[in-house]
Structure formats: C-alpha cells, structure tokens
Amino acid sequence: MRPDLSLRRALILLWTGAVIVIALFGGATSSQAVGPPVASATATLNIIAGDVKVVPTEGGPARAAKDGMNLAIGAHVVTGQKSTALVTFLDGSTLTVQPDSDATVKQADLGKNQSTVRIKVNLGTVWARVARLVDSGSSFSLESNSATATVHDGLIGARQEADGTFTCWTRAGTLFLVAPSGRIISELNPGQMDSVKTGQPSNPHAFFSNDSALRVTASPGGLPLILMVDKARLAGFASPRSEVNQVFGSFTGLTEQGGRVVEVPAGVAAPFMLVVEGQTSGPFEVTLAGLYKGGQVSQQRLSGTIKKGERLVTTIMPQLDDATAGNPKTAKVVGLTATPFQPMDGPLPGVLLLSPWE
Image (tube, one colour):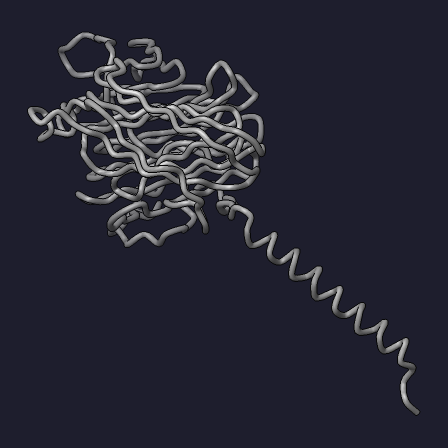
C-alpha cells in the first residue's frame, strides 16, 4: 500500500521546520560572545609568557609548570627573565608573578563570603587583584621576612630584593604594612608606596609604575578590556562582575556614572588592543586619554552603537616625545591614535579564568 500523501507532506514539513529551527538556534549560539572558562580549584596556575617552574610543597628540584595546573598550598612559583605566571584563586583574586620572581602560596582559605590568602614573596615582584568579599575579616597578604602588606580588597603589589628591602604599592584599597612584631609600620592609601629597609624610616609617598599611562573610560553599556603590547597581559572587565588586572601598577574600577575605567602603564610606541563588549543594546562611548605623571595630555572619543553580547575591537597607538622615547618608564606620551571599531569574533585574548562566585 502507498503511504497517505497528506501524512507524507506533514512529515516532510515537520522535518523541514525542525531543520530550520536547529539552524537558527545554532547560528544564534555561534554568534554569541564566547565566555572565559571558570575556575574549579582553590588555586590554578596559568602561564602568561615564557617558561614557568614550580617547586613542590615537599621541596626538591623545580619542575616545569603545566598551563592550567592546580597549584598546591606551599608550592613555589618561579619565573625566569622573560616569564610571567598567573595564579587564580577560587574567590576571583589573582596573583601575577612578574619575571625573575619566586613566590609561595602559604595559605588559601576561601569561601563565598570570607577568604584569607597569604603569599610569601621570596624574591622579585608580584601584583595582586584582591576580590571584594562581604566579610570584613577577609584579607590578602603579601609577606616577607621583614614585613607584611595586607588589604581587605584592592590592587596591590610587593617586591622583595636580594638585600632584604621589601617594597609595596597599592592602587586600590587601604594597605597596612605591618612588622613581624605586629606593629603597624605605615598605612598606605591608593596611589602610595613604601619600603622597609634596615636603618631607614618609613616614607609613604606617591608612585607611578611608568610616567606615562593610557586611560580608557567606557560608558555604562560597555565592558572595556585592554590587551597590553606584549599580547599576553590583560586589564579590564570580562563580565559585569569579573574584574581582570594582571598588569603591575594598573587600575580597574567604576566611574560615578556607572561606567568602567581602565588605566595601564604606557611609555612604548606599540599597539594596545581594546575590546569592548556590549552589556545592553544601544549607543556607547569610549574616552581614551594619555596621561603623563598623572596629568592628562591628550584625549580622543570613540562612539557608536553596540548589541548586547557583541564585541568590538580597536587598536590604540601612543605617540611619544622623541627626546624621552628610549626609556618606557620615563617616556612622555604626547598623543594617541585609534582605529575605528570593528566586530570581533572568537574568544577574548590572553589568559582568563573566572571565579564561579563572581
């Protein structure tokens, strides 16, 4: 018997409709911004650049680190001359281990509302983005043999030198520099630094990582994320609640109007990549500013429309004063140029690992 033609037509229409729906949903899914992975371990070690080694908790020779490995409490992270490592904690705090450095995670008691993290800086420089948690007892400490730098939340750094000098900085959050006896050596406000050295008094004072800086301010509808000229380190925002700060001396925060601001050291005539992700559909504006010793010397505004979940990208090139261009730390920025925004496909650049609690 031949099948009923009306039934055959109905089945064909049903099958065709299903294919169309799958195609539509598949296309919509593939066009959405791909989000970064989420952390699942207490501390995860990623390699930002170069070769990174780990000395196990039980001691012994240093071993080559594996990107994305779980980092045990008590292990040393050791970087070489052109190497940088990133440790991401479950609460969203991160530790960037700068080149030629050695740091140990001594404690990482983490919770959704309260955390205690202690890092021993054995040698070299580290930079930390400390997540803000509800409990006022939460703390993040960078330690040496001579002092400990502690904050509740913020952006802090520390350097241990071979001669015993311990220097610390804060870009956000009040930092307490405390002696082993418990005596408070100094209380640092954002933008200040201090050093502990035998025979020298405490001297809190202002600091600039580099004399020149690039500042990006985005309107409330956009999330800015800067990829540095090394094409490895990031500073900015990967989601509305996920702040990223892997760059020593940089600042990431909110404006009074609800927008977001990112400020990173400049001083090299090389391209920075800026990615802006739409949080709402509609118009947006980004203001680019070149700073020299904290003062604005140039400004450029970019504006347009963006869809929710869409990513746009531009390249920013600092222009430097010829007389000072030879030294990135003291070079003077005199202008900025930026390419028009273009759509960005694929995942965000760099190394990113988000907290499941943020």
